[in-house]
Length: 200
Length: 200
Ligand SMILES: [Zn+2]
Ligand SMILES: [Zn+2]
Image 1 (spheres, rainbow over the protein chains, first blue to last red):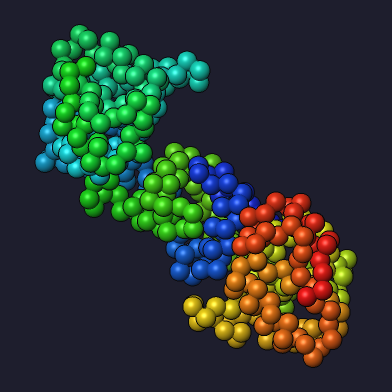
Image 2 (tube, rainbow over the protein chains, first blue to last red; image 1 turned 90 degrees about the horizontal axis):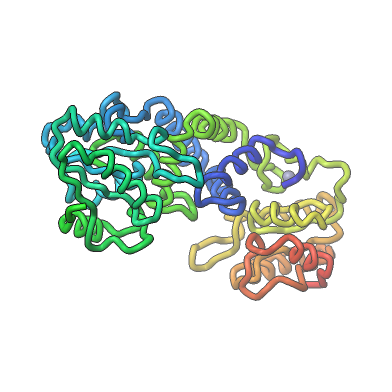
């Protein structure tokens, strides 16, 4: 683009280029596409983003993203109250929900312990988990963490933290490949791993 | 995601998933990332889109995208007025501008002739091109179309249309691979092809 020309468009391209999975080239293509479809795509997308920016919030209980103080999964009376499935990330929660095999509730850590990135237990929702297990009368905690080094380190840390609560700890079993990340698996694999879960 | 839950977020994911190069999985990742960085990313992005939606427009002379009736390239007094570089798409114009070797003006066709997609000359900016060549005293038209079947069909059609104007027709030469698309080439290749352009 010409230097100093149409800086609003350049700004938009630069912002899009920083999104995960995009880069300068795809950002340029997306922005051109949006401009070509201004009425049916660009304006509605700007408005949808504005609405989400105004309404999206983290559930204060489980860390899921929704539009209310306590999310729809936490308040759903149909869901089992005795089981918590611990995930790293909301993307993992969504992946398990798509599988449709889990009917309990969740706890979203917001990442994994990481010495390299200086992420400690208090940077995650780990203290909250121990509190929930005690306060909500939880009988089973499913550790649905990624099969990565950091994921498994975090799982062991949580197991230690919950050792004195006599809650049953299980982890996803069959079907999760070594080094695999939940959000990249097909829905059937996740459901199978969940059904075949074993003691941790 | 749970059925009927947080429909604003689902709507946003569905819209993002339809953008070129994205899909459901990348759309989910992008939207989660945006929600996590609501203040520094989601809100500014929504506002940048809104601004572009309000200000972006096609140059009425060349079809470039800018913010004014006639774009900054068309009105730049430093640029040669006798040469027009014909491109399929604004993305190709940007690619040539990044190369920095072309100092004339452009004409953006808005696509290529295509029997399959029923795109005829009047669906593109081809009649405007013939008019510009006559009215603006153009001495050279560079046909910088993609080295695809449709691109080359379009180049030949334009050559026929301009046959009676005695304008010099050239095309990009060295460096454009068969079947290659301009927007995927590196900047140096485009500049070299432009410098080595030959009679059409
Ligand atoms: Zn919740
Ligand atoms: Zn122009």
